[in-house]
Length: 260
Length: 157
Image (cartoon, rainbow over all chains, first blue to last red; front, side, top):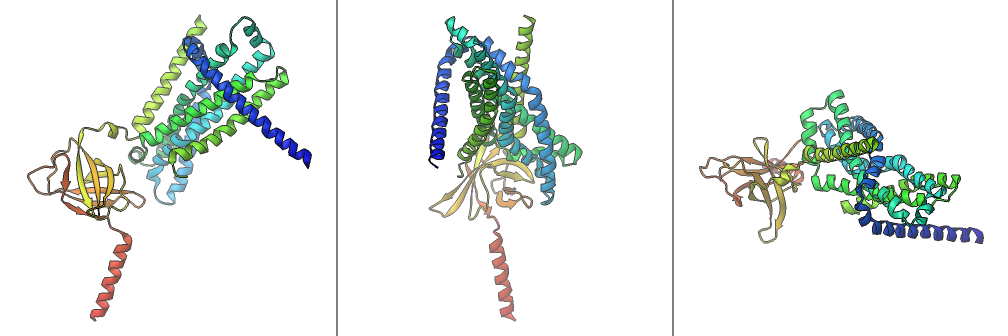
């Protein structure tokens, strides 16, 4: 019994330590940001790695999520005889929730793992220590551009996801199921608000971008320098990002809606 | 060198696509143009009961949306609801004896302000007040009216 208790205490202590360390790491990254912005070519390369290479998975997922939304929405709305509202349902769900959240989860799987294992491997092969020997700060040279690249890519990817999703919903709803095209778009435009819906979605995806990128570079940078350590860092990145995105999503939604 | 250019090209294309997607979301999906629509004029109407009328509810005339409600307030002195609405400037020939009523669109639809043109030669100007208004119909009040009228009928017999 006592052993269980000490285990729990240790686990909480370790968790708090990791959390604190990640926040200090974030401070270090932010401190390195102004200098890194002077070398945009490094950031552009990272936007390419985390954004452009994630484009295919984001676009295709968005399309299919939108198509399923239209199918499910049509099926439910038909019971109320309100299929004209299909556009609103699909657009609100995508712009407010599914766009930012699903993009962040896919981003963790596609770009977060790549970041964590890349930095972890640099650590394991002593490239980071080598940089330190040459008086190059690895945080500034390696971590900051990757972090900024992730932050820039996430909101853009989420916007592309939502746009593709609305296109998918249009394809299934209007082209296949025969919802009236005019009411599909006009009801959407009547009900979706620029500030409350679109901007809150962009804000969410930005916050998720910070969380996902930070966790990926943090786990990679602090990975144990062995093959097993790198693989564990990669796994932890996906698990922690998924959890923190979903928790952050609830908190952000509660604040943005102001209803709790 | 060639690889760097490919990276730059891809990144440029990606950022461009992202911005196009954001543009699509703001202009096609939302009623963004109504925010820029400061080219319009405001009308005020007082109602006994506005039902579920809210900010951004449409104002329509002959079924065409010509403006939007910008806010709904309760006037504590007159004990009435004050609805302010913004009418697009292109519709500047609305007779000033037009009457406003609160109507419902569809079954699930929200409520909107319907304008019924009058015959006056003068037109509404900015921050004019609509004199003739008709409140929203409240289902419970309708039912109780009906029940009372039934009761009176049976008394008369």
